[in-house]
Image 1 (cartoon, rainbow, N blue to C red):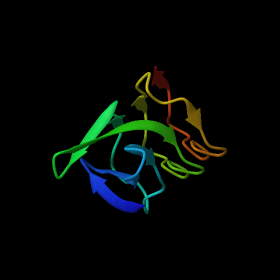
Image 2 (cartoon, rainbow, N blue to C red):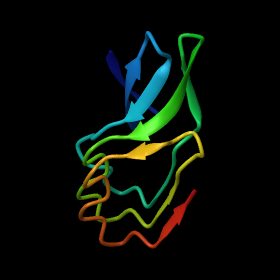
Image 3 (cartoon, rainbow, N blue to C red):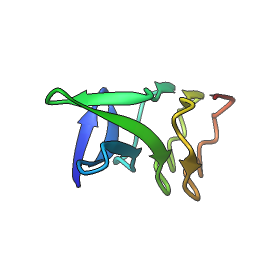
Length: 91
């Protein structure tokens, strides 16, 4: 497992299964809109984004909109805890 920030989003990459999980990054401060892709590419290897981890966006008070791809099949507890400005979730 490796952790990387790609296009402002932090992921945990499972190299064996070629899947990625969005994980908590120290605040997504100042970001009001986030679009999670269905896959990311790192060093010519594609990883399907399948989950949003526990507390991934916790405390992201300026987040107003997030787009979650259909490839995401699980969202951890408290993933959006404290996102007081979140108005739109597109799935």
